[in-house]
Image (cartoon, one colour):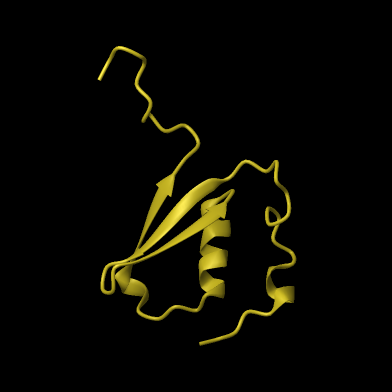
Amino acid sequence: MKKIKKKDISNCPDCDDENSESNVYLFHNTKHCLHLFINANTFDEAMNKFDLCSFGDRPCWKIFLECGQQPSNAPKGKK
């Protein structure tokens, strides 16, 4: 497995910015039931971060997105 050097992620646009609004991408490995959560502003940024991990068996990975506007909180009184 390739080791990630600090310089490889130093140019990440949202690594140090606490106020940066990002989405959560879930990378799910269907073969081994592994989950990797990545915060990124765009799909391309999420894919670049995933590529830094150098995982094999790419066809075994599925990608899910949790965006900032989730319809999970129903108004009070409604279920």
